[in-house]
Length: 172
Image 1: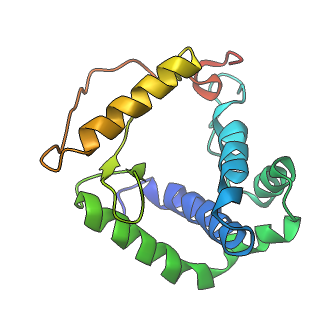
Image 2: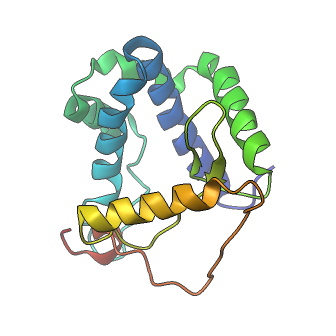
Image 3: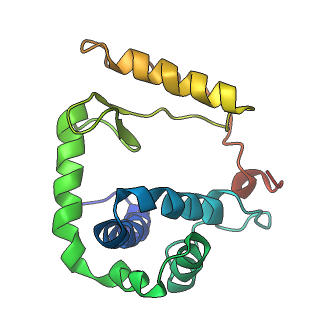
């Protein structure tokens, strides 16, 4: 059961995950970079009118068609969005990820060196680092912490608002 307001967000996410699973099954894991980037660009890197609900058009048929077009994939992959036959695979992958991190986490869950490398929830950041070097430093620091089997959590609840075009109304 979901708290009020969560069901539609969950359903949107599931539609996108079904599409991702279908692309990965046919195109391989290397294709996921293009798809993931296209989803990110079309969700987080757009400027919205003030007060608009950025979620309203996420994972709609038009949004998914746009994502597949941007990523250079056949539009028929969009059919997977409403195909529940992908759900067993998605549940199994979620169970595996949560089994590696524990069940008191959210997403993203990242595994370094799959299938046997360490997994962790996060990192959760409010804005994209300013340079490629800073991105790599954050990644390397996260990998370093995860390699310690006894490491489990760092947390700071006071954080700035998300600095993304969809949230700020400013181009990125």
